[in-house]
Image (cartoon, rainbow, N blue to C red; front, side):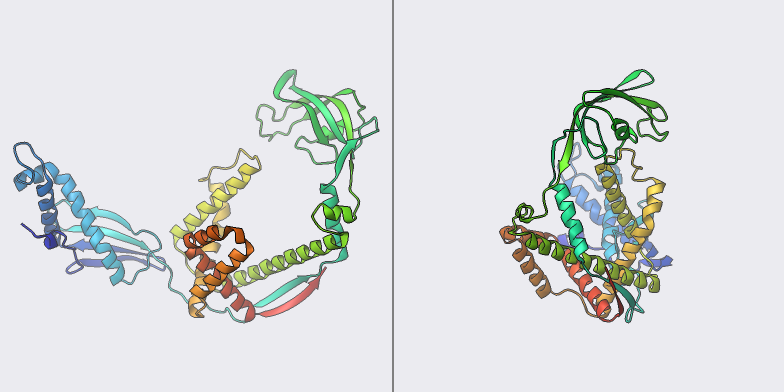
Length: 440
């Protein structure tokens, strides 16, 4: 009987025939032929293992004749032989051919009947082999925005709007600037619509409404009065039973309220835990300047990315594009769902896949280009840089030091990649030809 070493014998590439049938930048397909002798050696090893474990009627465990073991476990033995040979050979083939798989290699077209040689196809999607070119001296136009007093005034006005109070109005009739308290019910062609009714509903008469013409129909209505407003619903309305039909709302105006804005003074600043209006204006200006810098940085990066992709049309593995595409589609569907759009296209719809595929390809291609540049210019993130980033994260949120540590441990690879990308982008900006345009 074989000893333990023989039973765990690894099938080697010796006498295995490899033939390349597809050789593309991101995919290689190899036809692998394992000689009969190697298959039989592995089969003998597996059969002995099955014999030792077999419990067959009339025989003690491990004492059944081999022929009987083969008859009873033929399919399982063949499956185990296939699995072990392929598991043994695939890593060796990948190493011997210097392949870099981006996903799990695919095994296809297996031909094996248990008595002859084994043939199968090994399909490996790999990273493209390329060098990034034309990345120094990129011409960039940078729009530097100056934050003006009017920008701060606009933000102050918005803060006043957000902190406004609604108070009872002395007016008797509804005007566009009012908030109306209404009661209504609806019907279509004489049939009540059960879920189109409300009491004590507050409606901003100057704001856009989901039902076009509804707010306008209330303008001029007196307190306590009732009015019927008939609105033709659009043919593409989400509610199919109402699409293209007239809907009549019976509306009663119960009360009117008007908005009172707080004064732009120190009291407004205290709402934000600041001592004076001047401090509030300084805080707003700093925030606007920070936002402008982030926008300028994003626009600069997009110019860089557009240039790199144009100059480096790197081929990309289809499987990575598909994974990125699935991620983009899922994000899009979540956004639609959060907006209450129930009739979002299916995740596998051609409409969504066609829409987001160029973006998916761009992301994968850009990832390869930035990684390639990091290698070419030795810009990979170091452990020291990661440690500094960790320290900064803890400084920003000192009460969550333990959570920050755990996050960095769980996402170490992604954080290294992010730091590397930032170094590459800084390198490109430092070596770019930049024209600054001052804007207001």
